[in-house]
Image (tube, rainbow, N blue to C red; front, top):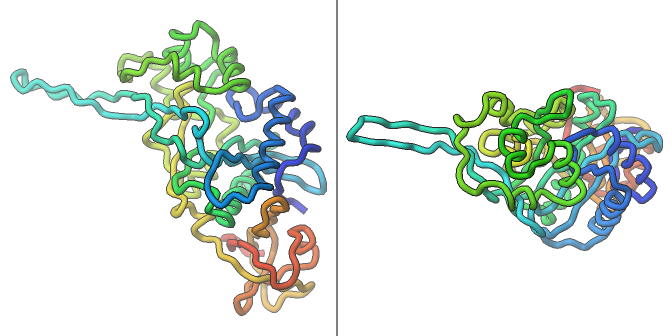
Length: 338
């Protein structure tokens, strides 16, 4: 049965494989065994912690089917808690001269750390992406936030790798970053994946970047995403995330933001006690169901039936979710029938 669960040490080979397949721009999956192992250990400690409030935790999830790892996604509880979290903010600057009757509105990029402290949805990757599978993985981690909101911030953010060509060249990086770093996009991406983006911000200009002065190719890719990220990007747009105000300082990729209260899966989920039965009292519908646990967190997509304030599930589903009769689950009904 397809399910989402917390990462384990035994998932290291799968994550190494994902890192090789993810290509340029997916800095949350570095091609570095030690960093991946450290990420796993940090995630396991986060799930095991009795976090009564938002901290520096990171939660890594694995999508699996019958023991085979199919993808991964993560949540960073507080972006920039240990180091600044920089983005470019889209702004409009006004240059006016009443005597000359000139009033110009100019698009500019201003480096900021407005989103520091927001909860970041990070590293959603499925090697053989299918929309339904990516949606399931992306929404499963949102159900973890719905189950344990005290661990997370009310504001949410998601960064996506920017557009690059077949030679892994980023027009946005070439226009700005390369002028200050004297290295290629691929070289800079490797440094970021093995270190952090902080060094980029430290050497980038802190004054506004006037967009009309950038090459046309750089302007065209601002807010665009790498084709590999199209499905995770679309999944969050469907949830209510918006991509208007911020872009990535590194490659100009889209930055999505949302108020957690308005995210569809979080807002639409409810807690129900379960009834375990091989037969349903009425026609079932497809539900996304999470067990609400931490270390043993599980999510499945399954036919179930809401009947008199109880969610009826099959014994097989109950076994996968690690729940017993009357246990509370966090669930949301899907739009399609079973």
